[in-house]
Image (cartoon, rainbow, N blue to C red):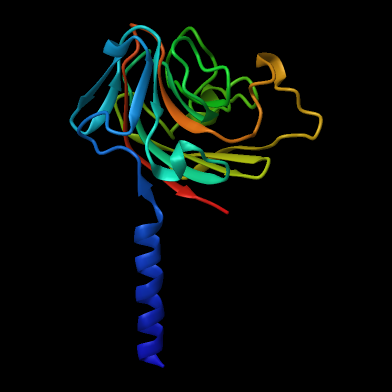
Length: 209
């Protein structure tokens, strides 16, 4: 009986370790494609660093042929003071500008020009400064965990749930239009503006049925 328990524990541990797939090697842009100002993204100390004019780094690699529907995504993020960024899902490569397809999960602890803070499902389910108090801080790594199952989106910051939203049957995209709809697509990291510096690393995904 003890041997059976040990075998089951070992199998479970092996599955857990192999379940998450890293999308970024921490060294270069393999599997990623930048739309916008190419100089806005660099790789430093194992992380993508977004700093410059508007640009987005889109996952363009082989995992699920960069086309995800149901998934868990975890990204470690560090925002410097007064910085804005974001993590997109269900999007598609765009040569320039802010992605018109998919949803943005906000990265913003203290960016003064925007009251919509980290963890928000941008312009769909927004949260404010009080909601992230004592969860995220500038110049410290925190984890954005995004789970999409069917029409439901859950967002956690450092393990704490801050958004749980289900797209209604009559949804038309909200204030940003039809592109903001649960569908399928790739992921993207945002470089928001020349004054913002945001770091992204440990970008891992677990595809779901």
